[in-house]
Image 1 (cartoon, rainbow, N blue to C red):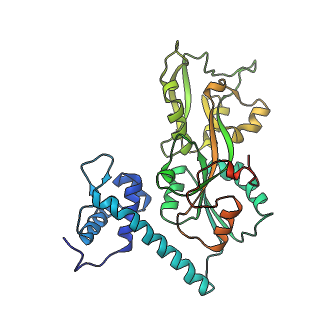
Image 2 (cartoon, rainbow, N blue to C red; image 1 turned 60 degrees about the vertical axis):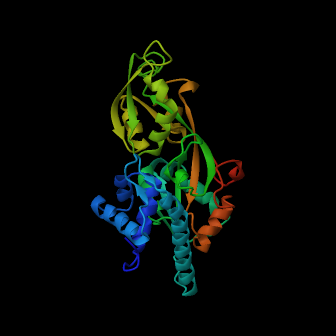
Image 3 (cartoon, rainbow, N blue to C red; image 1 turned 90 degrees about the vertical axis):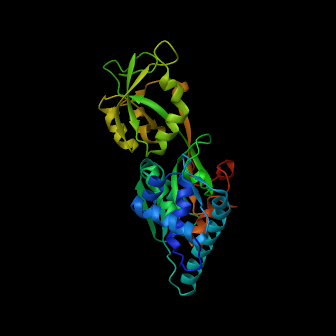
Length: 327
């Protein structure tokens, strides 16, 4: 093996970073929107170009070799520099993309983003804005593919997501809470109550959902406890990517759903939905804004400064407490 007689394809570098961040060939290929056999060939071609094995294929999840670990930060620097060079070249030619590009998880695209953007526009003239709404995994994929500058999603300090693992800079924009809710019966009590039901029908999030990842991580033990312990047995009767569908099913009396309070506020106020459990069953969550870990357009960088991003890699916390639109 050796690089002497081979050209380097930039896509191989993008693929290598995606694989390092996901630890899984299938997920990385999906994030890069190519077939897995082609993705694997790209990784092998890159290894042939470098002249050493970069991936330990015997490890599960996939791990980098010593050479791969040394290579990864250098590749990230190269890709970031190339992205910055492209932006600067477009600016010099007067062709910079003026629009801001956001990937936003379903619930926040309706409950949070419009109000937050309205407040932000009192301090910044952002120009054209493009948004893509999807589940958390798809939003993360768009960030990995550099198709968006920002990802707006929920997060939890003790449950790192893929963007945290990839060390994308992030700020906290506000607070929310996942609250178990149920449709009421004729007397106004919940149809399904966590402290009383012997087998609770649960309306669950799919594996692609960031809210599902947080919920399962924080309440896994409580879900597993049988009646007679701290909670009932659980039976998952319906699964969906987004909280809107789970709210619809909860309103129809199909089970208990853990919904962001911001999404269920109107229904809780009008008693179309009622709490299905006490504070011990709630999960505090954060509203977060992630950015690309490379230089962005001046408009995008200005937005990041306005929301309190400051230094790259800032952790979510009180530095954004005064942000317009904070929940």
